[in-house]
Image (cartoon, rainbow, N blue to C red):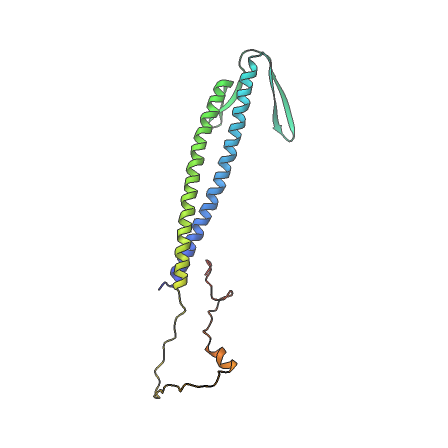
Amino acid sequence: MVERSELQKMARTIDAHRKQLDDLHARIDQVTAIIDEHHITSGILLHLQESSKTGRTGARLSIGSGVTLNYIHESKQEGTALVDIGSGVFGEKPWSEAHTMTLERKEGITLLHKDLSEQATTLEEKITVLAQEFNAAAEQLQPPQPTPTPSLKPTTAPKPSTEKPSQDEKESRRPQRRGSRFGNELTLDD
């Protein structure tokens, strides 16, 4: 038989895992946004490389607050971009090199996304198993049975009655309910 304290410990463990899973999902969403950003950047750099072969290429660059700059590059030579090369240091790189760096970063971030997704799947499976164990243990939990007190009078077996029990007698025979706000059911909060 499982004790109530063990059930509470199981419930706390499940809640902690659920919070960890929520945090993982938030990180996955952030990483997905970064991957999408790298995909857009890669596409723009590729377009600039391709169209620079004609001798003139252009793009519109959003600088925020609804303001967009019109960028025009008039040369058959490849243009340059400022690229964060780490620790807040920027380097001027040709578009092809910036494109390659962007693809490499995107690949690394995609691996991180895959790792986080696998962790989330493993954690979801663990939570499912723990919840099933909790439910099984909660079913085994029975309210404590009162211990009979010894009586000084000899007891005799009651005689079977042919009369139907009254409503008051029926109600007095019902098992006592546990003192829970929602009836007999245990919740993860119990």
